[in-house]
Image (tube, rainbow, N blue to C red; front, top):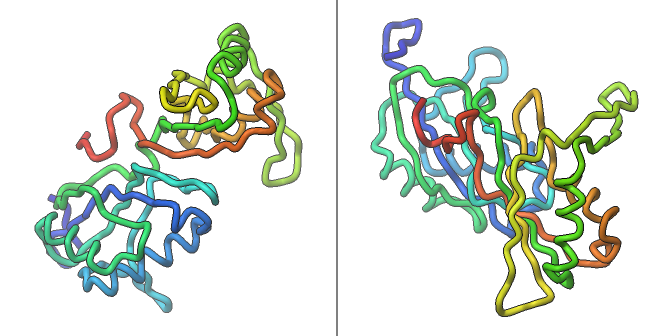
Length: 238
């Protein structure tokens, strides 16, 4: 059991949620604000920081790119008192805007590792409309035949840095749409931790270089879930 300075128990709610199409253009900061407003309307007894400008003590597992939808995001909220998970879920969902919903959760008085420190992998589904599986397979073959895939980007200081992204691509599976031959999906597992992190857009850029027809297709990205270094979902306790 973890205790506050006054000796009372500290409680943490770990929640899994979805972000659907209605909210996909929110920035991470706007997403944080929306969640805070929702929890306040739901009258969740959140613990607040001390100081001149107190704010709810909550944290996300990973920031989401603008335009991305997800079936598996995670959030920690520190609480002033214990609450049954089903009550927490029902109260939040009753006040949530369209496109946001709590799927699962638990409340504990045990000290948890931060969500951000646990994240190591992310699974995505990337849908290519107007691309046949045979065409996409050319790009996949090129991917698996390369030991190194250099990718150059600017860091926060504006310096150009080149990294090998091949070790950050752990699995790529092609999924054919039986009802639509001109649509193919990839399910990919990428590094997503603080030390190694690969956005799916970078993988798409590589595939476009290998298969130019992809550049003219409509591409959608959905994050399916986040995992720790043992490939356990984050809702599973350590």
